[in-house]
Amino acid sequence: MARYTDAVCRLCRREGEKLFLKGERCYTDKCSVSRRAYAPGQHGQGRKKLSEYGVQHRAKQKARRYYGVLESQFAKYFEMATKKQGMTGENLLRILESRLDNVVYRAGFAMSRPEARQLVRHAHFTVNGKKVNIPSYLVKAGDVIALTQKSLATDKMKDVIEANSGRPVCSWLSREPEKGQVVVTRLPNREDIDFEVEEHLIVELYSK
Image (cartoon, rainbow, N blue to C red):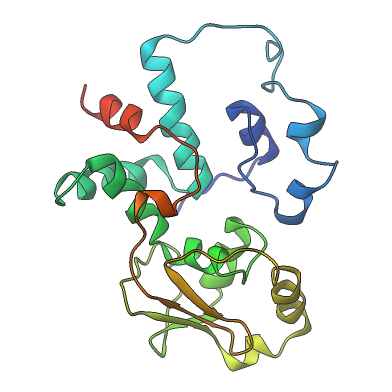
């Protein structure tokens, strides 16, 4: 499957805020957003007033890049969200949060979502005891996501877990770092999601 392979810091600069795509680097003075707080490119420092469509498009791009999904995947998730009960925007964010790579990141088993995606692809995790190597796998309430015993024993994973030990855990997840596992106690509500995006703009964009 196609995947963005260029410098991810450009994505953060284009959206004008940190999307935490580089893990530990995002928390240091080396972060590109901190050093160059303007859009990349020749005209990045110029001021440009966005149209209504432009504002909606930026909201969609911001969410898509934050969770690391392709355009076609994002459109598929939006279609799924429209078929569920409740508000479409909130349903969309809930689906994105339910991706296995996001849960691995939220649980503190990776320093960034791209790293979490790679770990899942390399079959370092199981869901309810079965190996799953699909980052887009959508978890459900009650699912148990765990590191394989071999992966849990590596120094690299021990260091990552230790580095993330002080990071707050989402209220909809129950983490047991010593066992290398996390339980999805329920699916997240909108107030559980700390991602700052106006999801109604995304709904308006796709409703045109």
